Image (cartoon, rainbow, N blue to C red; front, top):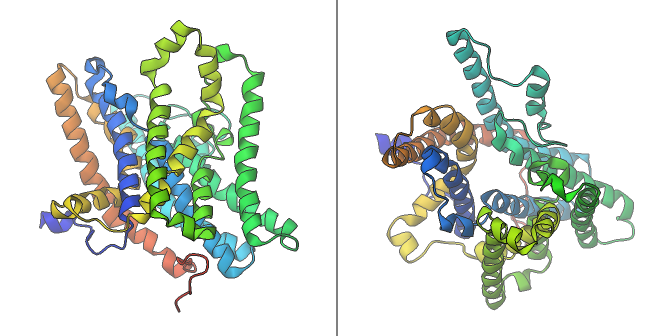
Length: 410
């Protein structure tokens, strides 16, 4: 009975296994980072953590690749860009992300009010004006996010990217469709977002003294509108240069380069190595790098992984033999629910309240944390996220899945 309750029928799901690995790796890295909160003062900063890529940045690139591919294929199939395409794109994206988000956000607000009522004390929620911003993804639009539900900084960046990227494409199409082919319009759109955001970030970075630190640019929407565009650039290559994309030799070289560059970027920007920048007198240069060039560097390095991982269509060998593929696919499916539930709803609201009296107790808390996250995320996905997402099939037009040049099946 329990097996049926938590089963997601992963064996029958039509998935790209390589992309599932990327999505599962991204969420596991994120949740692992939050799990260390349970150790309190017993956490010694494990060295291997400094070699892990940024899970959120990996999510950005993967999301950009998938969403960018959908947008490009829709544009090419319709051979124009109009409000119907735009509204359909937004409808399908928002049915995927908003219901889960609003459910968890509403639950946190209700829980805080109930706790205040029971204790007779004032609630710990932000003021009403700040709280309203969370419903429109404005909580970190031009400044770093408040303490409440802080993990949503990355979701706000994604949601605004879903808004701005197709709008820029629409404008580009309106201006240049009579003179440029669609392929050039798509590339111009991607480069406009990437170059424009980096230029804005660079100008802002040089205007503010280095003594102000990294400025929290990583979590500010207007500074990160290029976050998913590196994945969109990979989708552009896949759709318009399929022969190069499917070249096995090139794929292998790119994935090795991408992994190496991603690990190097992760290590050289980690807390572990900051003291060496200080000692070498390089800390000002490091701070400027983290304000500016770090973001395209990490985005492009992860985009290099996409051809190989996208070509890994099915799980074979040990992945399939020992059931690892089912686990990977399961985690990939519930990754969005894990993202929303793991930190504030589970770790901060419940697990962190258990006293960490010893290292052993800290590890027991971590074990409990992982168990609760996996169980609740599976249930949330199966009984809410998936059914609500499926409603979009009745309320929006299905988006094309074929590559450019492939015959569209009726």
